[in-house]
Length: 275
Image (cartoon, rainbow, N blue to C red; front, side, top):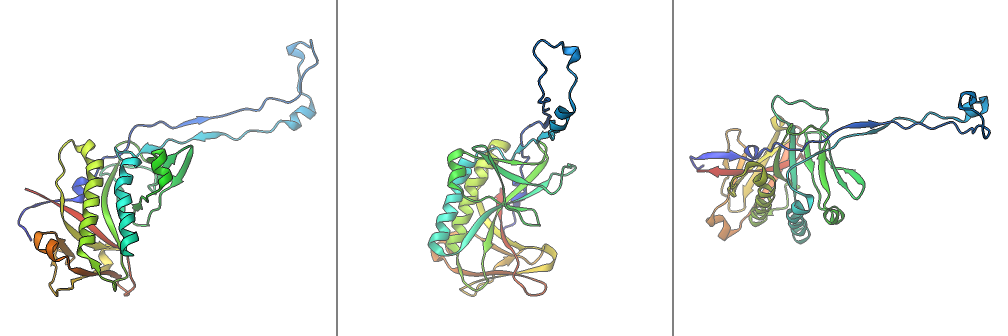
């Protein structure tokens, strides 16, 4: 592996959200009985019938939603559509996902939740028990430029953007597909990180494969040429992009299994080489 400093996608971890306010709103229903015309206000005692007809109105609570990220869904949708087209053409799927966690020394309501808010609607965004959120491509969200929001305070979240590889471990995946998926992440990172960090983000030139649960699973990866992939200090395989592989476009067998041998989730974490 190149002896250079790596900028993990976790260095792309973002301080997310914008200020919002929570409020409560209470409404009251007045008695339905009306006093006779001309009767003084002091004499307007409610009747037993009016009291029976008066019902308490429950408190209406307006909950705040903090914005997730610094970009609009419409901008992010450009990258998501590319992944959708890749799925339709290849029969496989690379999903863009976000690992969302509370930043160090931050606290907030658990579990962390995300929603898409658009056109007066609010829809939850799918998540796994491990805290990975899948933001899908939705034409109606794009048209309305939906806002992605969370239940956390401003600046309390850190997010890592990566790919989920949906593979059965048997059908090979083209190197070129993973290469294209990394370019999609490049685009998404530029949109999310650029406005936050204020500097140029280098392109992804490596994918590190991992699985969940992290300490109790194994990633299987092999090139069809028989070449072994490099591994990290945990023995996890690394796919390093380069001209040689770009020209050959080999296929890879990819999969992940839990300790009991059953399939488990497989992720491709982008790495940036910072010179």
